Length: 624
Image (cartoon, rainbow, N blue to C red; front, side):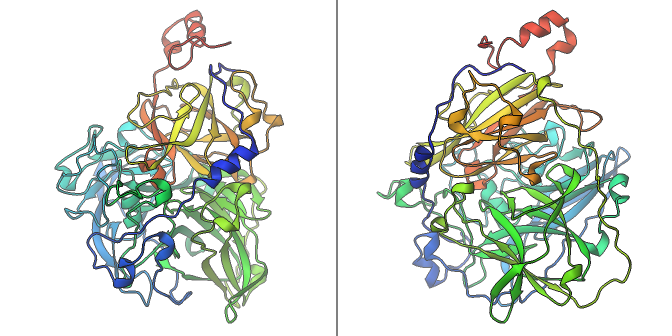
């Protein structure tokens, strides 16, 4: 087993977790779009629950499918894409006035990039957005290091799930304004290089600009990036028109069709005495309208045959727990279970074998699920994609009483009476080989905390990430505390001391989930990590992940290898980010840098290498 951190984590009881959960209410005072006329109803809104989007008829519009973007030329013999971010109007519902949104190449969601494993591409993300933001900016968020007085909107695109060089990762401080007139301190190059040397998977791209990620993504800056290879194509999976990418989001609207986004915090989060900024960041955002592929409450027409659905939770904060149910459209009532999800892949690519989901499929913000659904036995029926995750999600501790903005009905599926008469191949028993990262190969262990006990200078609650030595949490501007060496394998143990679930995302690497245990049962200075003694990962968490959900009062142990492993992935060094993917949390201030450093053991003898492993990442001697 590898080295371990020095300081013991506190033992927290379930009673204490519930007490914390009780003080992390999430209602937020409401504002409206900065550059849109505010209808009278929106002017009187004070909290998210005080605002209601227009009463739209559900299931009116057919689900659209994102276009596929083509390369505009070549660079160094490789395909080169130019994708432009701009503002435009989009009909999100038949009866709603056109909504002003932002999108890549004038599309919301952005066009899909399809790439081939082992074939690198270049992408130039071009900023053609207006001088002013579509939504109100809170200039107190990292206001000491960000130029909010800059003319033009700051953007930077992150390929989420990409095993890429640091210069092309979309560092939060690598932002740039229109035509690259101004750039952030981490900006390196105009053309991003994606090596695509990783398993085929459902990736996605989205904005990652420090302090305004929540606003830029909410405005529409996100799209799919599908990585393919010959092996996957030979599996006989549904393809072509029978493969559908679905990005699930929640939005709220004003009567004039403009996006509604809250701009003030509630009394319970401080600022009730008028001391909060105006506008102010809110703790979380939950919309009251389901939007799939940029369309509100759509319906999808399918044939009675298998389909491949690439599901992405693209919401700012909302969790989804999904199931297909039979649906009576005339009465609006649900019936028995519909066809199950058979999961074939997740964040990092194909699972080793197909897994039929028993119950519901959980997706935290930014998580993906690659599933096959067989509609063969449901000819002529209507199905509802149903969600029962409350807004204030706490995993097994969740309560319907916390569902301040419920969103149970996501999308309708109409199965036709007849379909393609061709035989459909059954799923293979084995999809791919996923090599196991052995625990006995671990070079280092890190105990990392998720906390919500601090407030900022305005009294607003902070969600932070910490370490064994700084369990109350650190900010993004604090020195780097995680410096894994290239070629090393590490266990990162995420301990959630807050009152809500957090989807934790690591840039660059994919990891495997070892399991979970109660937070009070694990002391990093005393206890070994025994995978067989842990609560096993959920079936949909097997394989390679880049996001893991950490519920209140639990520790989740994940294992990651930094660099190429058994022919998968590639070697990269440099500075990357890890953060909560509830985007409001990420902006304020639940994001930290980590740095992959060259492995000194490659340039020294074995004695020196062994000596270096006797110290933790800060250089202090380890306990043992």
